[in-house]
Image (cartoon, rainbow, N blue to C red; front, top):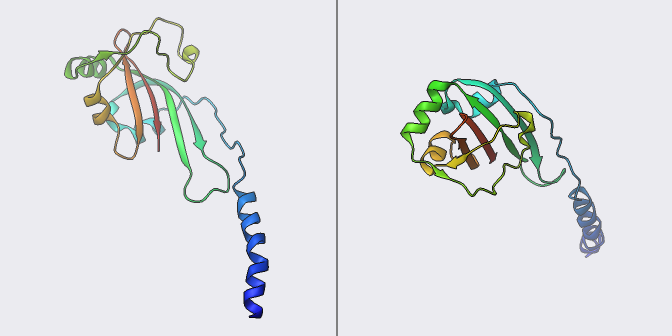
Length: 149
């Protein structure tokens, strides 16, 4: 009986400590990166990349239960051979003219972009570990990606 009373008294304390650890804290630290290797390691089917600009941020709350997910977004400038191959191999559909990437394009220049999407290309490029999309600028050979893992 004594143990039951102790458990009843300790239960609210344990719940309070658990909820305090799951408090909503912004843990995302977004910085712009230009190294190609991390993108190539995650998406090797992109082929040879000329240059890239990307960022990564954690999703969720510090102290939450389970592994932390992260979001990757960025721009990849393809070599001309990869661009021509992807452009001809997949059926591309232009996205709505008012659609804009979440990541500001100022990091890669301010040229006009013509974004298109292909389900087949998207499924080819990213593994099943990732959720998200890859878009191709059919005028400039630039890919924009926004994925979560």
